[in-house]
Amino acid sequence: MASMLLEDLYRLMKTGHVQAQGIVDTMTQPVVVLDQHFSVTTANNAFIKAFEIERDDILSQDFFRLGNGQWDIPELRQLISSIIPRAAAVIGFEVKHDFPTIGRRAFLVDARRLVHPDDNSPNIMVIFDDVTERRRHDAEMDFIVAEMRHRLRNLSAVVESVVKNTRTDDPAVARFKEALLGRLDITFQAQEVAALGGVAEFEALLRGAAGATVSERLECSGPSIELQSSKVLPVSMILHELGTNALKHGAASVPGGKIRVSWGLEAGPRDRTLLVCQWREEAGPRISEPERRGYGTELIEGLAAHMGGSVELSYPPSGFTATIKIPM
Amino acid sequence: MSQNVSARAGGDTKVLVVEDEFFIADELRRNLTTAGLLVLGPVSSNEDALDLLEQELPDIAVLDVHLGGGARVSPVAAKLRQLNVPFVLATASSAHELASDPVLAGAVNLGKPTDMGRLIETVRKLVK
Image (cartoon, rainbow over all chains, first blue to last red; front, side, top):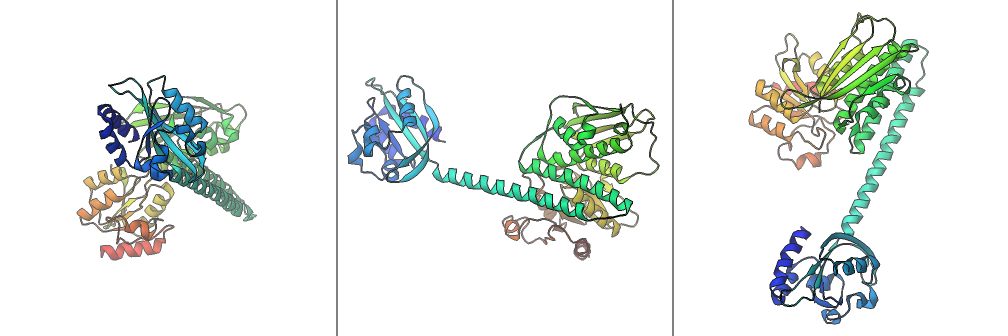
């Protein structure tokens, strides 16, 4: 927006000073025009108002000496003086400064050399966008987000601790507790990735979700793929379930067992791109298809279906395999 | 998309469930199915919900409001209003936030976490 104005203004300035003064005065942002010696030739009403000065006090004065040199900010001087030799425009240069009358302010400064057709003495137009409030608001938001993230992490730790401290002597309940803690941990980790507003890299997610012990057995091959935050929880949970099974019954339960995981992108139906991931366990114990469909299997299938994807699980004696397809 | 219909014998009332969090969607599905209702979905996005509505008309819908990636359920709610299908919300969103959306304003919100007993009662009452 500021650059649009700058372009329009630049064109108008070429056609005559009188007209330009009128235009400059209608602008809500402070604007000042300097000659080649940095003396003020034009200042708009917004400039006069924003910096609490008198117009008569500044016209024909050296800009950098105005108001006891309050404008003699090294970055600004550098910016303006470097425009003179080159014809370049500088857009959105941030200047922070303590002004004696108006206090600490942050400005985005646009500056451009103007060449008048009648003479070749260049003028410099400088536009100030006061972003002090915007910056303050951003900083406040950053603080709130950091605080929320901290509380979320704290709550996660408390919930896990409550479960851990709930003692039991019953082995069935102990197994339940272990499974619950594993799933809670994945849920909280995924929430954190989502809270950071980010995407997650597939291999990093795979290694994190499978757990440290299983991760040592993984042989990964596939391109770097970023998953959007809404997919992080379901995908981590699927990988966590596969990792847990491998550790209990599969290739990670015996020395020398390996898990080959390969993945890539494929075109799917309805113009969707699918992430296709193969999980193949090798050199593990001989296995057979479980007699009863456990909750883990139900979970893996349910999670994939909920994302609009699918999974195929198979149990050849040589080792468990899974093919997972997830729309991106 | 027949796999999206969790069939159960004797379930005459069809309930569309739109919820992006798998565990919550699955809990809703299990509770509604156990109560003898036929669940359409659950689906996790507006696109999937609108696709499903093209194929099958529910008697009522249970909607989450925030569907991830900044999406809100408003397009589905608008479609349901147009089709004259009642809906209830199951969302952690505040009453103030809901009031600012004309399509969602005035809808019953059962909140989150959702009391499943109250949900089933409300669904039955709205379908009559």
